[in-house]
Length: 334
Image 1 (spheres, rainbow, N blue to C red):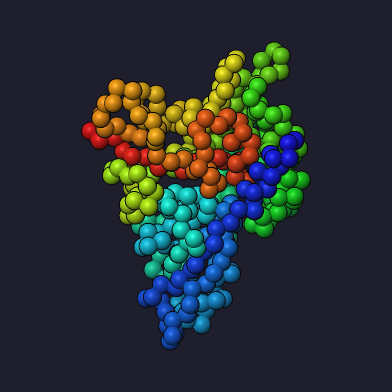
Image 2: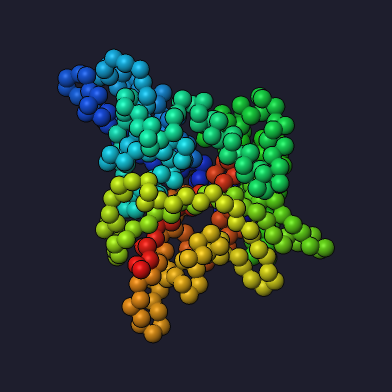
């Protein structure tokens, strides 16, 4: 395993976003109001897991009543089951550091957010996603189902604590396959870099196809823009399309299956001659208004679409074996 591949996965696990958490003004029951809390949030983590750190800070300022905790960004409720890093990449086109969020202990917006019972709900969501990914990769989820309760607990604890070493020790029990093509370095099967989709092989044992679990978040804006700071603020989740769909990793002799190929397989309306990628102009100078992919982010990285998809999968996948891709597009004007 190449040293740079080891470091890529390490950076994913160590990635964090500085948060400045404000208590919503309607819930301040002390004078003066408490200053914001500063928290470093793991990218692969989830906002509800930060509550044990944040609540003690605000406890003396809270009104009486039962907690129903949720977060918002500029009034926009944040879905708790989406990894924190994905939320940041998706909502902040121009990265904001620290990221200013508001925490609420009352008034849960059940018309927008599904209920959350703290860590138990987040753990359930993680394990369920892991089962879904195993089914996509292997055609069944029996390896996840057959894990002992203690192994499942250890796996979850390793994710909560950002403990890559402990997580890596448990990976062989999940028995996920690996993908490879002639443009990819051979991966060590016992490493986190080999956490990718189940495969079909030809008679020579070379990989032909693989199914990769992908969650694609597409934020669509109607107004054109040149700079990310000009992207309008998001108002509703209706502006975001969510695709939970596997990518068929295709191997063709002499060709490299790229991130562009993967995204175009998920978003055919932005593929080939029907779409335009940011920075590319039509040769004839046509001013036809059409859909345009403006930005692709994975793990906070603005990824070049020509990068081999196998490298992205090997290095940038989340611990539940899903590859989360945030895409900002200019919607077609019809």
